[in-house]
Length: 146
Length: 85
Image 1 (cartoon, rainbow over the protein chains, first blue to last red):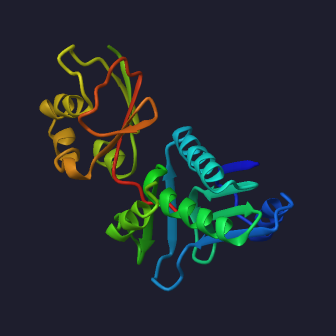
Image 2 (cartoon, rainbow over the protein chains, first blue to last red):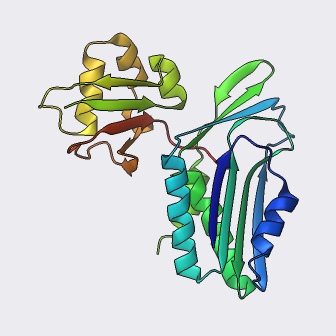
């Protein structure tokens, strides 16, 4: 069971967890990414490539399900304007055992960061700037090369 | 050949539009050629595309290298490296 959602709606971690847990799997791993509140960011704005974004996330989820024999994978990503403390992304994986769930969850967020067409723009102190990609993100994604 | 061009993030801001339809000549056969062709007549496009190392592209929503062939592309997107998650 694979569910990919890209939306401007506020993400509720409880709702997301309930959805991935409903798969009946023995092991659930989740990653939740928040708008950071320790860096004077007032607003985070997420732009994306409609259609291509969903396709990229579905391809990643399909790949994870096949590679780790998952029972379920769920990716929910917010777009538009959001504020510190709000959820940007929820990734959940369901498997028979913890190892597969944990590895697949790390794979999905690492690869999402380098392969899904989202762009972050921060506003702080009235100034806006596009977030630059980090080399460490490329390194994290590269470790999952099969 | 008619191509729908899409721009995202700071590429979109620098060019000043999110999309446009273009009809490049037959000599334009790769994404890089398309970028060169767009930049040739316009200081705005030339400035937006000045650092090719910071540009990424998709042809018909498939992510490709800049030297990838256009083929019979209907939609080409040009954008910065992604920063989601």
